[in-house]
Length: 320
Image (cartoon, rainbow, N blue to C red):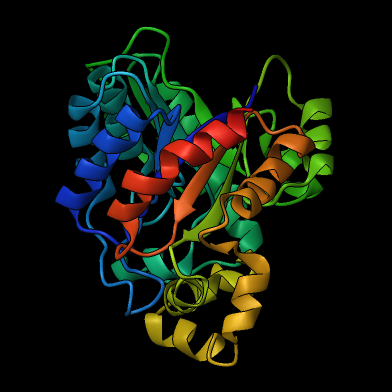
C-alpha cells in the first residue's frame, strides 16, 4: 500500500504555521511529512523561507508518529557535508528514528547566496556523490579526516549518533543519475510518476528501497480561484528542473514564467474542490509503483481549510 505524505512548504508559510500544520496533518492521518529546504521562495508572492532544520526539529518534538524527511537538502555549497551529517544525526535522535535525509544536487536559487558561484550540472553531481560518501563516513562515529576533490575535513567526529544511522534518499531525474546515485542512496526521490525510473533504480540498487514522489495540488471550494492561486504561487513549476535548477533569483523565475497562463497551470496541477480529480492525479504515482507520495497543497491561504475540510476525505479516497 502506498504511503501518503504532507509537504511542509517552507516557501509559502512561516515557521510557526508549518509546525501547526504538521501537528494537524499527523492527527488527520498522513503517514509522513517532508520539508523543502530553501533560502528563498521561488516567487516573491510566496513570501517565506524559514530555516527548514529548525522547523523540522520543532516538528519532531510536536509529533509522535509521522515519518519526517528533507525534500530535499543540498549538502555541497550552502551546507558543508560535515554539517549535514551532524544535523541529520541530531534530527534522527529528536525524531526517535523517524527521519530520512533527502539529498539532491541543489538549485542556484538557494546555493548562490554564499557567493561561491554555481557549478555546471556534471560538477554538482560529482560534489553530491562525494558529499554522500562523507556523510556515510561520519555516521560511522569514527574520527574522519578527508581530502577529496571538493571537500576537506580535519579530525571530525559526530558524537551523538542514532542507532542504525540515518537512511538517505537521493533525488534523481534520469537513467544517468540513477546509475550514479542508486549505489549511494537508500531510497529514490523524484517528482515525476515514471515507472521506468523506478525500474532502472531497481536494477542498480541493492536491497530494499522506497520510492518517494511528490505532487502539487491546489484544493479549494472555487475552482477558478484555486487555479488563480496555483498560477500566482506555483507557475514556476512548469519550467522543469533543467530550468529551475539554474535560475538564481525570484526575478528570474518571474521572467521565465511570465507567459505561463492560468490554464497551463491547471493542465499540470489538479485544482478546485473535486477530490476525485485530485485522487486520480495522486494515484498515478501508486500506479507507477511508488511506495510514498507527498502532497503539496499550493498556497498558504487555503492551507488550514484544506486540512479542516479536504485532507481527511481525500486520504480516505486514496486508501480505498
